Amino acid sequence: MSHLLTEQRGGVVIVTLNRPEKRNALSPEMIVRLAEFWREVAEDHSVRTVVVTGAGDQAFSAGGDLGSLIPLMMRAREPRDDWEQRFAADRRQLHVALLRNASFFKPVIAAINGHALAGGAEFVLATDLRVMSSAATIGLTEVRRGLIASGGSLVRLPRQIPWAQAMEILLLGEPIDAARALDMGLVNRVVAPQDVLPTALELAERLALGAPVALEKTKEAMVCSSGLPLDEAFAVETRCTKENAQMDDAREGPRAFMEKRPPVFRGRAKP
Image 1: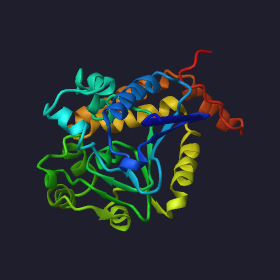
Image 2 (image 1 turned 180 degrees about the vertical axis):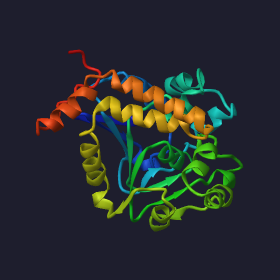
Image 3 (image 1 turned 60 degrees about the vertical axis):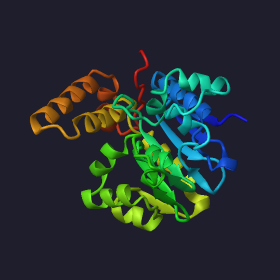
């Protein structure tokens, strides 16, 4: 079986990390496939949002596979198969796979079906909306393995939650439970395990009611202005506003409201 499964339902694509026997640990194959997926879906105008989850009910992802991915990242051994060779040829694919960039602006929802640890937690921090199982935990445990959370979390986490709480998660390396994650504002919803994916899909359906480009430009403005001085941040917001205003959807939305009908958004589709 492929280490990564994808299924499209209308404008929503479900991406499943598919190594339940290994707690969905990130393998070279999974990383290469994820990197390819994000590049493809960024250009696929039929996709409005992505839901990411893990196979089974034990783990969203336990992080990088310590027997394959991490040794290759550390250059501790040579590649042993085609997937490892493809990964080793460009280790930066790990950053693409975990969305450690500021260039993917379609909304991403995490359906955290089980424990999200180390690289698995870093993947969660790259998403925009998060639904977490009440039985799950989340933790950046890298320091306990002599590593650091270099998949984006050292930058993202203190921008998403208060400084002292971010430092506690990063320096102690101890997982926190779903209730505390919700209290911190790290996740949006905590639900029973069997309700994680349905809740995430329901959010995706509601999110998809928005105009596709408006959604992307909203995320782009938020991501690209984060941390900038106010004048520079407002300039980013203004640019995104102007770019969105060029879309037919920016006229269709108000027109549909005035005509008392649901809007028909076309996104980037040509008339």
